[in-house]
Image 1 (spheres, rainbow, N blue to C red):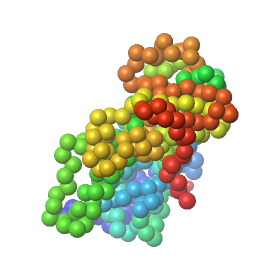
Image 2 (cartoon, rainbow, N blue to C red; image 1 turned 90 degrees about the horizontal axis):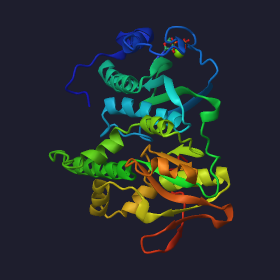
Image 3 (cartoon, rainbow, N blue to C red; image 1 turned 45 degrees about the vertical axis):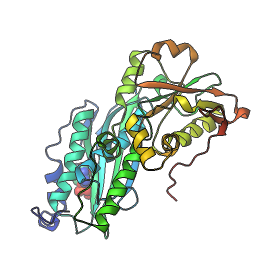
Length: 344
Ligand code: ADP
Ligand code: MG
């Protein structure tokens, strides 16, 4: 990957030199960040807010494939997917820590690319990088991001607050990241068989971006606050819509009915899915990595969001014994099943 570029061996800088090189230009912006990088621990002060913490571990070959994921995108995505969990609690994300394990195949220039992506995400979402850890790894790249944020006690949204009669809503559109991944996998196979052929990603920008450059929906958290809507339950769509709906239903002890014809699917996702022989509905239900927000609201809040083009009501919550169902376009009732990605 870095054959034609300058390669600076990480050993040249040493651990402390590397940390300084990577992090010295990150600026602290939040009043709550009392002490960032440079001591044994960071010090934060959230006054009388509730503190939200979420962490993710990403392993090369398991969660990402460096043959088609540019390192800058990897850094950006590692931060975004983690911030998404803070937004899913209806919180404000303010700080991250980043820990990395690097094998000897990575020169300084490669790590710099990852940190460019991390910095881009921090600047765009107003996040302070306040610490982390750095280690060598025997094989492959490891990145772990922890995000920290806050919310007023009464604003925090859990998965367990949905009630019978609530409306089930989702932001943006679904299935794009999964279909984008299928295109990247296809082009990778073609490249392995014939390296002369350039990847054909023409016209697929949106779904490729959905896969490589997802964005946490902080804007939806802000929008709901502006509309004076507090979701009764909320979760982010990382494993797939069906799997996330089942989490809300199980934890809230309710059932639900969703409607296939309401699922928000972008035309490019739809057409490309079809081209690849995939059912767009299945991509939307089980694809995952959309990082949209799935939430329930009281019926009385419906008028406040009904005209927003970025939020779709896809169904409603029912009583627990009715189960979790999807009514298909041809009016057939299907039971919702989690086919989300399972780490084990
Ligand atoms: P310690 O020996 O206490 O673990 P380190 O020498 O590992 O401390 O780290 C020094 C400082 O640099 C700490 O503030 C730590 O949080 C920060 N740091 C270490 N690695 C990273 C990294 N990859 N990204 C951001 N900050 C880091
Ligand atoms: Mg350390």
